[in-house]
Image (cartoon, rainbow over all chains, first blue to last red; front, side, top):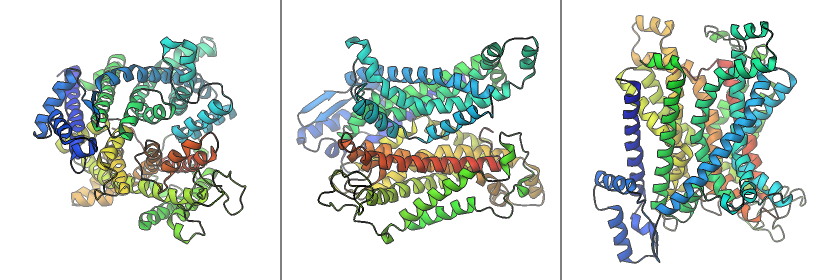
Length: 316
Length: 322
């Protein structure tokens, strides 16, 4: 069986299990779900909720109904005692904001981590290298919400350079947009920079001992060119995979950070849904995030197969 | 509760007191690779003592909290509202937004945060470790099924999964539905750590299971259970301990995140996460309320990560043998 077919089957299985789990979430609520979701509603509203979710049906039927709705863009409703409101539009608004944040974070992390990693590999065990390594170690241990609150207080409140929280869409002013995204981006990048940098460093130290590096040096190619052209390339593949794997951690971290900085992405939506006990919204948001995560992993895996012939051969 | 914490305390001590064979002698059969900092392999790096000192201090104070001369963490003192640290000799770390003693709240909060983190990882270790050992030992069908199971669990971002489980299992907070929040937190964070611990255990079991001494034991007629428990487990244990230390660190951070989102233990009970959450409202005027638990988390995570690395370096743990 070709690798791609096997991977696709895997993808479908994971998709089914993940959506099944999200459907199961509502049944996990202790007591009567409709009571918990609409504590102040009327009986008619609660009945409508049972109807919408299909609580009287079996779990597989609930799942089929849910997947069908989801595929048609119906992501359930917010239920309040005043009535209900669809979740779909909110999620469609939140996704681009989160993607933008993830993009900024990945770009900033790679921009900082690659030069640092290359340099500390080149000067391995020097004083600078040890300093960079130690700081990276501390950075990994820094909880991102702690960093968020520190930045929000010192840069946002005390220095007043950027707003301590809130979000400006890019259409409403490019400068304001970047100002509102600076702190969340830095917060999420710091840990990633440390991870990428340490990884690239250890990878490149190995690469730099290869014969072809010696050969390149012997030909009189400058250090800069050897580092950037000959050594970085083979190491970039590992970096790519790790960047992909880290998207999952990033999405998790982004929940708290978006919530703290009031950036209206998926994380903020999840946070608000939890705080207001909107379990249907929570269910849909988690499904969207998990599916996105599964797709990214699939794509990275696929790319990795295409890029590195050694893996392709091992698989077949 | 204190049983859990004391157990960990002993493990930590066991790791740091150099026992007679700590210089790697009994493990000399492990093929050693060229490692950075190879010269310092025999001596424990200085940071080890700092890290263990902090953890011992922390574990001591969260285990024997009741015996410490602390104020009631939920008692409001008049005039202590948002008093900065080191201003009032009776309340060294100052007071929070409700005039409660910060030192007492951070220690009592640490008690619950640590209980949750340590128990969650123990939970994950018992289930994930067992599954990992079994799937690494019985390769083939059983192994494949288990590995696909881990992969699926890993397909959901862990923090989001934990968040969903806690939020849903807590249900209606105004009604008592039997399960205390602490056990829900332990369960959710434990479930999330199962696939991670299982994968590492499996990878190491795969590597050790093919060694000659296992074959020799099998040739002498040892049963599978003996092979797993007496031959493989002792060798896989360093990897499990190392990843568990990192896991506890991750769980502490996760509790903080859950606290910020308001799904940790209900107020007024303090955990590190809930102190941060309630302190956020007075971030402008009294930022120390938020920063004190933040730094408690930071130092603890730093110490755990460091010790995890020390164990890994010392025992040459491989994580990528999958």
